[in-house]
Length: 242
Length: 256
Image (cartoon, rainbow over all chains, first blue to last red; front, side, top):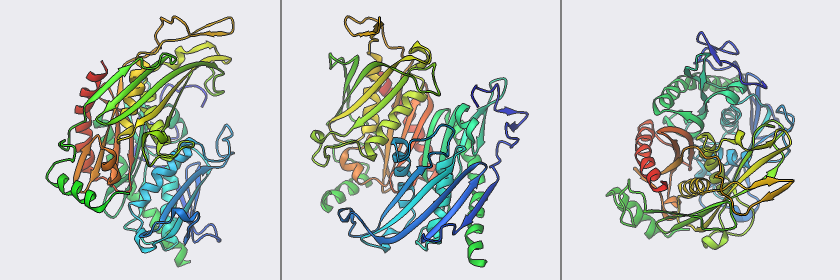
């Protein structure tokens, strides 16, 4: 969308017809990459990502070895043609930052102590981007890690939320922002929890919200997380029940 | 690496609400902001946060706008953890930690709408002003996030605009200020055991389980960044947001 729309919310509905607390249609498939130890594809609306896990395996370069646990490395990147204006191939500053926070999110749940000196590599590739890509990537990576049999304290599940406006300028919090909302909305928040202990493991925001708005959006996202989590578990089970 | 004795001492003290430098859990280190420290820069600031020293400088150049924002100037923030500032830092391009500091600082300034980039256009689609805010650690002792935000904010506040005449950038005897509107700061907390401390030192950062930086402007939240290999409970998040608001007001006073 080239110019700022007059509203992102009208009569309680968003531009794509969703309700404020409605996530886009999701499709999850486990085991999409035969070569990998674990993998998953997540589609959320037009956002499509694949996560592949390799490991535990030997760690290179050797000097990165941790004597008491495995080194978990999450690498997030986008295909050059996944966005409107071609993205320069290879990780830039944005991708390096996202990889860092995603690695930290999974470090809080993966029981790395079980594999001293090893590497667990998670590759998150954005195939097509329509906002909320890091959270889609996180949701996919969570399934891929489970598919690879990596022990975890719990699944990581994320939902984004944002702040939208109507024609009169009134603000609304909404979950799972897509591109026009990411681009024109007043805030964009990536948020993920470990579902077994209810702790926040990823939280990033840019925009402008009051504390009350933040907590309102967070509560909406918390509800949706349960749905997303159930879809993750169902997709994981589906592979082994085939 | 930190020795076990020191680690245990820090953790045991935190249980009693004490920190090694004598601070309580919710005490910020003394903050000092000096501006105009680099004559060659359009704006500059040196921030002292206890032992930590961080410098930010602003350079303003003429460049071509990004294709998707032809009618807007450019703000770019970079950060480098210099090898001179700590024994554990090595020379070379910024690593993930420095990139994170730069990007989170950038978000606080950008989302706080501190600089009106639409005011930085010379010729739409052709020539715009590009504002470069570069951050360097001088003496590293933790909390690069908040010291960087303070340094960039102070440097922008005092920065002067160059002039553009007949294809030349003039940087002498500048009077016009950079178009700066309001002030934003960030406040960073770390969780170590059950303690949530503000403004961590380098020693404390090494032990952190989880970290949260809150960017604030006019009492609103403009940026959030969670870091660290652990999580926060909902109660902890609420506590942090409340405490961040109180600290942000004190930091704004230092900037004024």
